[in-house]
Image (cartoon, rainbow, N blue to C red; front, top):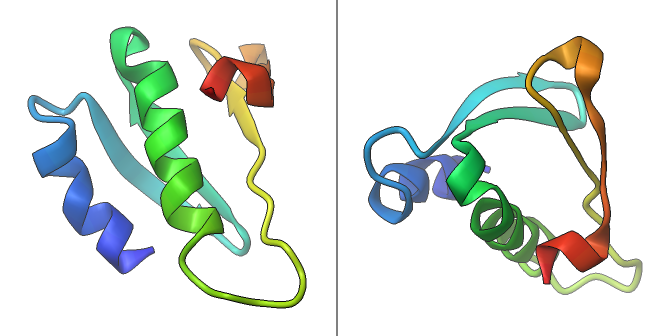
Length: 79
C-alpha cells in the first residue's frame, strides 16, 4: 500500500488519483472521473499481484460522486 501511494502522483499527475484514507482493510481514493477506469486497473494490479499467496487477494471497487451515492464498479469496467 505504501508503494501504491508513492506511485499515484507520478502515474496520475494533477491529483488525478490520490489515497485519502485507510480504514482497516479498506482504502478510500479520490479519483478524477476521466481517470476512474485506468486508476481502478492500476490499483487492482498493484493490490492483487503484490504477493504470491495460495489464496487469491481480490479487490472490489465502489465509485460515486459521494459516499452516499457509491455503487459497485464491476470487474468488466476495470478491464
